[in-house]
Amino acid sequence: MAKGEEVKGVDSQQGAGYKGGAMAQKETKRRLPRKKIKEPDEFRTWGSRALDYVIAHRRAFTAVAVIVAAIVVSSVIWIRYQQRREERAYALLSEGIEGVHSEKEISEKIAPFDKLLKEYPGSRASTFALLYRANLLIDEGKGKEAEADIERLLRREVPPSIRVLALSTMGEILFREKKWERSRDYFQKALGMGEEWPRSYLLLKIASCEERMGKKKEALSHYKELLKTNPPPDVALYVRIKIEELEGK
Image 1 (cartoon, rainbow, N blue to C red):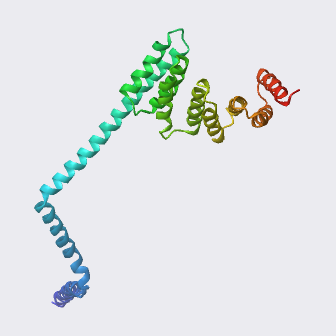
Image 2 (cartoon, helix red, strand yellow; image 1 turned 180 degrees about the horizontal axis):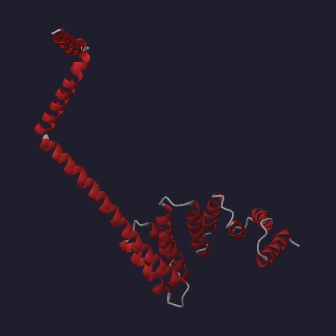
Image 3 (cartoon, helix red, strand yellow; image 1 turned 180 degrees about the vertical axis):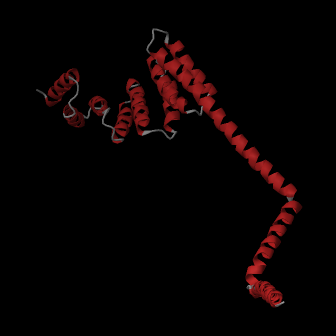
């Protein structure tokens, strides 16, 4: 009997301990800060509100999504279209450049550039086409048409090297028309761009214009400046002869 009572006592103590632990857990739960309890509820509340808002305005959201997708697709199509145009324009430019160095008639050489400028007038390749066509028109004796091409080119935003070529081409057109002063102005503008590679040529053309204008002093100065650029031997010889003539030797 003593043993039975002892076992019951242990069981009762364990039961009391279990109940006490359970009560302690409940008490702990009751003592948790209200903020920690409310956070999940608040999250669910805001989430529900957001979901309700999206559902209520689903047509508007769908329309916006469709518009954005349409813009993206249109942009991709436009970019690809422009790339294909440039590719075709450069193909015509390559054809024209090959023709420049051939034995074809000038009109045949001009044809690819005409087509390029007609079909792809705003392409990057059209800038080079204007320059090449202008030089071919000069050789064909069509100075006015060549001048129109260069004026059209000069209205564009182009790299300095291209602008130098355009300005010097315009100077050459006017030189052949014996418009010495205007010709010199364009050569001086080209020289003012600061590019070194055409410096000798530009100084020679400027001096030639000034000589024909009767401005011997300015021409002499530019011929002497030209010699300092170490021009090719044949050009240097020509310039020395000119200097001697102008100095009266």
